Structures are given as structure tokens and as C-alpha cells.
Length: 484
Image 1: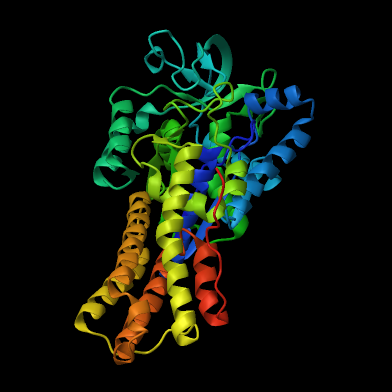
Image 2: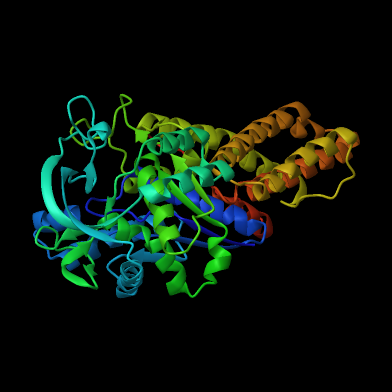
């Protein structure tokens, strides 16, 4: 089966943060799991390089837009590589190929008479780059995401009417209950659709925002950053030359909870206007909070930098933290102490099991896994360990990843308990127990290899090191001791 998985394209007006790393890793884990069952998977990510915030950030940095966009985009690409989550394609909305596709969409909508040009007066949040209704604001009149009051603005823009599609979208959600996951976020979308939808402004006057794709039929207007950005999912497949219909039929967007409205309301309506169905599923996750259970802030000093975290704990340990510790349907806490604790648990369970197993195989059987007929009890243990490999092929969504990570730790702990109970070092001292020793070594050797294969989508380098160590008969250090 052909599958297509995407992160949102990241807005590079600032450096990558831990939330970007999380979304990218979870997409990569899904990709690896699906490939393990022989699906053909395309994974894309990239950077969204237009809009007022990019324009202002480039000016503040004293760089031209091109220089700033190149520098910032490279940082996001670097992070994906460090996370061992390199995409099949990294799109930039500044690419000429993407601008061409955006022009195709706009020209088609214009020719169909779908777009309306009109003057609009409303409250505009620069952080969101969106007009806001009063119901979108908190009691102070602030944007809930950016904690600032929007400014009143009047300008003439092109609009895409949304209300004519609202009942269709409500019916689509009802008929496709797995389209939005988890359920709590689907409820949020339904609440957004409970009242009439305002027209979506899809342009900005070039006099205010010069950093954008110029309209093909109106040189005084540039494309609204979200309309431009969402089309990237189509552009990426086109640039790759993929069979669009086959991949789009099994397409998955993984996004943070702050961009639900563009992905679950704007995007399906945009697609419908262009004669395409919505992506098949949208996985939504919460935010990471820093020390004190509050939003990360440099002034507070609770920021977790992904580059620093990888340097301190390693790529696979961070990937495992994401897989095991992040709450899918709500916000999650991440601190240096929690990362250190997770690292220790991983090292003391999974890492310790591998090291103990290898050393005993090395000491008692030339680092080889012996063939040995098994007792019924040992057969049950091996069957349970083998089943977890099959769990990789059963992964469908983000919660399945967390279940797999939990099971890896649980079985690692149980296998360490098995060693303590079987006492292979005692069996080795009794010549009458050598057959039993070989049985235990067989269980341990096969068991750690099963666990490594199950962990491969989450910790690909660690899994590969374990499997290769049995071929080379050389042990590897998986999670070195660290000073915190």
C-alpha cells in the first residue's frame, strides 16, 4: 500500500524548538513502522517561508529575505538529520516549483468564480497572520495563542467563501470518524463548525506584506501565508513525481493543536474547491511545557533546546522519550530532570538487558546464540517476545507508538527479572545444568534481538548496533553513563 505522511511545514522566523523535533520524530517512527510491513511510504517536511512574520524577522536580523530564509531553513533541515528523521523531500515555499502550483490553484479558483474580492475591516493578529473574531479572543481581548491584542485593520483582499461548505464538512466528519484523532480534537473542530463560517481572506496587499507569492491575476496582492503553505502537501508529491491519487488516498497529516483550524477547516474546503478529497487522517498532538508546567520561555529559563538535548542524551534517547513520555491528547511536561530520568530508565532496563545478555553469551558460548530445545515455559516467554515484533506492523497512530515503547520497557524489565531468577552464572558451574544454561542463553539471545527489532522504528541506530554486534561478536555501548 502507498502511504503519505507529513509534518506541517515549519515557520522558520525563529530557530527549531522541541515541538518541531517531536512532530518530526513521530512522523519518522510511523514511516519506519509502515515500511517494516512493506508499505511504500513518502515522508515530507519543510519550511513555510512567506508572510509578515518572516518579513519582520529578516529585517530584524539585518538580512535580505533570501539570506534569512536560506539560513533558517538550513537549521530545520539540520535538525531533521540529527534526529535521524531525514524526509524523502524537504519543501520550501520559496521554491519556484511550489509557486507554480499555488498559481495553478489560484488561477483555477479565479476562473471558476470561486474567489471574491472585497474590503474587510476586522481584528488582525500578526502572530497568527489571521483576522480574528471576538469569540476567538480571551476576556482581555487577547489572542489566546500569542497573548497580544490584535490590531484593527481594514484592507481589500481576495476571499474564499467557507460557509457554503460547512454542512458538507460536518457530514464528512460524521461519515469518517477516524479522520481527526484523538477524539477530543474532533470535538473541538465540531465546535468551530457549530456556527456559520466567515469567508477566508486568502490575500494580503503587497504594500503591507511583500514577502509572499504574487497573485497571477493581481500584481498588487500576495497569497495569504496559510493558503500558500497548505498547498505544499500537493506540491511535494508533484515534485517527487509520485502517483498522486494513490498516495493521497492514504495521506496522514501530523500537526500540533495550535493549527487545527487551518488543517481541519481551511484545508479540506480548499481541496474540495479544487476537486480533491481531504487527507485520509489528521493526527493532532498537544504542546510540550517546560519547568513549572508553563510555556517555554528564555526569560523563565525553562527552554529545552533540541540541539543541546541531542548533544547531551543522544538521538535515540530523545526519540524514545518522545515515543514513551509524550501525552498524545494533552500537553506534556519536558525538563532536563525528566529527560535524565528517562535516559536512566532506558539504560537500566533495555541497555542493561543487552549488556548482560551479550556478556553471558560471550563468556559461556563464544558470543553466539545457541540452538537449544526449549521447555514449555521458555517457549511461552519467547512467543511473548516475538509478538512484540508483530506489534510494529500493527502501528496505526501516535498512541500505538506509545504502547510499543511502554511494552519494550516492560519486557526488558521482565527479561532482567528472568536472568535474576534463572541465574545462568550458577548453571555454568554445574556440569549437569549445561543444557539448561544453553536454553537460558537461547531465550536471552533471541529475546534481545526481538526487542531490538521492535525498537527499530523508535531507536533505529540502537537497534542496528545490537543486531550487528551479534554478527561481529563485539559488544557495543548503547547508553553511556552521563553526569547531570
